[in-house]
Image (tube, rainbow, N blue to C red; front, side, top):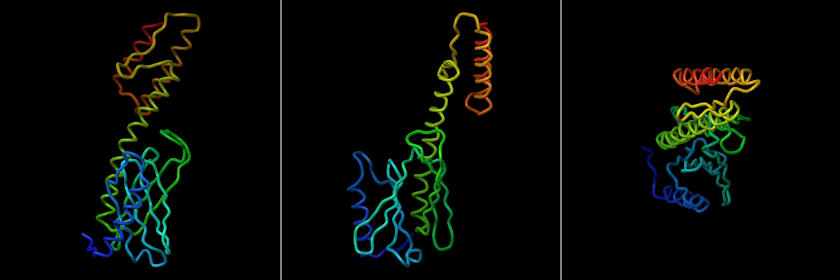
Length: 204
């Protein structure tokens, strides 16, 4: 555990207090990490803060004040940590597209030289949020694919099965192809695919 003297702890608490003042309603701090002084020879030490809604990098000015850079958890695609002898680095790969995007431009953000135990605590929050939002994005993609394929109900593994009409055979082939693509992408299980296929074939 890093040894922190009373003066340094007071500075950190003031910095966290400033961050708390700009959080949105209901957002709370879950973990934080302070940059080691050896990595901040030409600037005041950075602080990275994991909240319930985002990851915030706080940069403090030499003569007071501060700036923040934040990444919302729903935009995080991958989080990594590298622990070295002198400190730990946290790297994020994040989507630049808004909201629960399943595709789009990516950016890589690297935060370097933080106290190891504190950085590991921040990383654990990153991992938990990454996994939670990955599942939400997967469900979002399922919904989008279902809409494009004519309306599969993945909750009960039912597909829309309209009465045969002219051109229905072509439509069924297209739906079978989309279901096969979903299977190959791992979005549905083999049993779900077989059920969907049986229902489409049965509607012919």
